[in-house]
Structure formats: C-alpha cells, structure tokens
Length: 257
Image 1: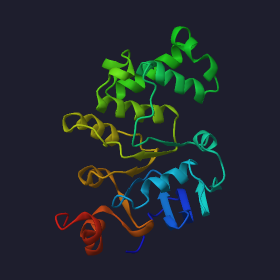
Image 2: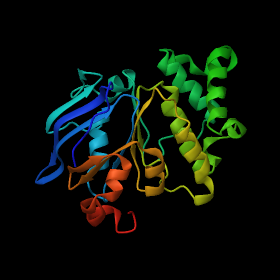
Image 3: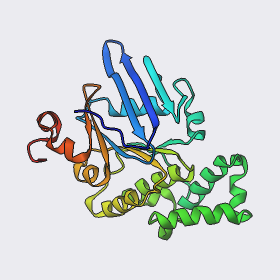
C-alpha cells in the first residue's frame, strides 16, 4: 500500500530505519514511520508485533540498535526520556503509572509545577497558587474527573484511572501524545468517557495511538500503520486498511471488510 502524505502537512514525529535487537530477536525491523502534524495516527498489529517496543524507543525508554528518530525536524535519537518530554513528546502506558496516595488534583498540580520548573514546591500551589490549582481543576473537569478530583487515586474506578493518566500527559502540554492502549483493562461500562475524551483532544496535539480495540481505532484514526513481525506491513487511511486483503488475513480477520 502506498503512503500518500496530506498536502501542506509536515511530519512532526518521524523514524528512519529504526531497528531494535535483543540478542538474536529483532523487535523492530527497519521501521520508517511519519506522523503528520495534528494527525490521529493509529499503530496496530498482532500481539508481539513490536508496537510497545517502538513506542519505548520513541520516548527514550529504550535505545535503538540503529536508525534515527526526529521530533519536529530535530534528531532526538539519543536524548533521555525527560528531555523528550520537555520538547513535548508525552505518553501514557499500558499499565497505570500513577501516585496512589495523591488525589487527582494533587497529581495534576504536581505535573503542572514540574512543567513550569517549580516541582520542588508543588504542594504550595494547592494553597497559594490559585492559577495552577485552577488549571488543574479545569483540566480534570474537562476529562470527566471533576467529581473525583479530591479522592485518593487508589480508590478510583479503573476507567477513571485511565482518564487520569491521559490528564497527566495533557498537563505537560504535549506537542505529540503517544497513547499506549488507553482502553486496556477498562470495563465496557466505563469506556464511554474515554472515547469521549479521545474525541475531544485538542486539534493541535498530534496523537499516535496503540490500541487493540478496533472499533475505537476505526472511529478515532485518520491514518493507520500496521506493524507485523517488527516491520511496517501496510499504511493508509482507515478505509484502505479495512479493505486490504493482506491486513485482513494477518490481523483484522474477515469481519472487518
């Protein structure tokens, strides 16, 4: 399938021949991927295809064996994860990475304070800095978390914890947001708020989504890349991917016509 870049848009996140080996195992194999500015780009593929390994390289958790990663035209291949985050590359995880003993409000104030270079005195923002507290509360209300923002994170329903993780990423004011299976483990009854949240993400935030829920993927994505055995297998718009016989055979199954 031929890639057809959208006119007038430039890649904000790009990889060139990205390869990661673990001994004799090739987890990502010569991956060249372009995510356009403002895109809703989904990365899909079977279990073990290398999706999370790829995201871990994009965010600096893993170093590639070879290849290059560019963010807004700058080479970030060897930058540590925290420097990539400062440049606006944020992510969520398959498994929650939250502070169970903090409330959502405290968590978001902490993130905002760190973003603004005042992480050491974040607790003072709760009492004295109404600006950061108000920003945190507004974000939480917008993500269906206003009613639980003063509850301990440990007692939140799992769907609310997934929403809080998205809130943490958005509080960092990302240019690119990597969502690693945001629906993983979320009960069906709690999924609607996450769907609504993803649909309402700011248009100027570029999103790369990894997700196994194909209903969500085809509702959300405007472009899709299929990863199989660590390599890009197909790319295109959702209708192209849905009608690609090769993709049906190796991943989607015959019911996604």
